[in-house]
Image: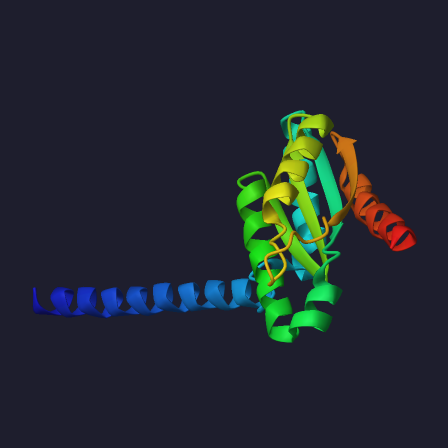
Length: 181
């Protein structure tokens, strides 16, 4: 009687503490993998995410698309309107892209004004269409209200990719983007 109630109370307290600790750990892990300015994922988890997305695409006979996106207007926004305006421009772009590619993709801040989109789609054509629509709605106007230059995008798609192909896809996309910027 009395001991079993006390034992249940101890176990309940231990369970609550373990759950709270697990939630804190998960929260810290997510925070470590997020860009603090934009809320986009940072590139730290990208290789593992690409392997998971490649496996998902293989299992469902889908394609994996990786796009390197350069937010062309950021330098102009920073130069003409200040870094605070540039930070707002980055955040608005990231929020718009996340909405545009959900639920099949993730946005990663690669650095500065460069982002990577990784997504699965029923076809490479569908992935390109989704990316184009997301970009169209994501690039915010300049702080003075004028339209911003469009973001530059380089997309690579692979049908039913292997893990090795997914890693090569990312490398190819980044290398090709560097040649075009």
